[in-house]
Image (cartoon, helix red, strand yellow):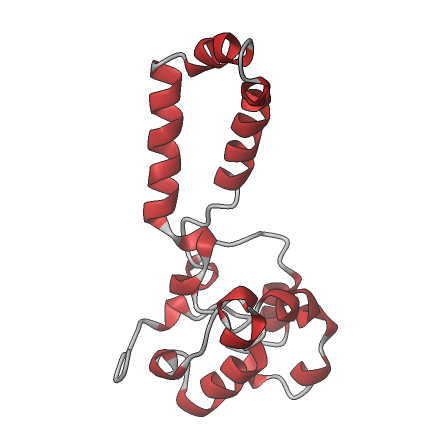
Length: 156
């Protein structure tokens, strides 16, 4: 990703990179929608009932459908800087309340408890906020590190 410049709308108010985030992965959510349509067309629920007589795992089919719908509810169609994201996002509300472009402009961000839940999943969040502060919200992308905790070599 060297030399990569990206539209700043993909830099979330909190400093996450939207293109790295699972809820922003359009291909993933298209696959889920296609799977749901296909299993509905196939009436797989009826098939699962029959299969459950010999293989009890198929009794869990309704749970599978429930989980699939919960995963689908995670979808973020539009970056938060373009009006998407969760309406109740306390980070965005804080940033906008302070008239900042993002958390990288806040002098109190290192001690900010609003970012703590994100830091648990995104271990490079503070590093990324430092990058954004230094290079700007449209020029930091090529220098970013892993998005999620499980993507770091030292977490495996």
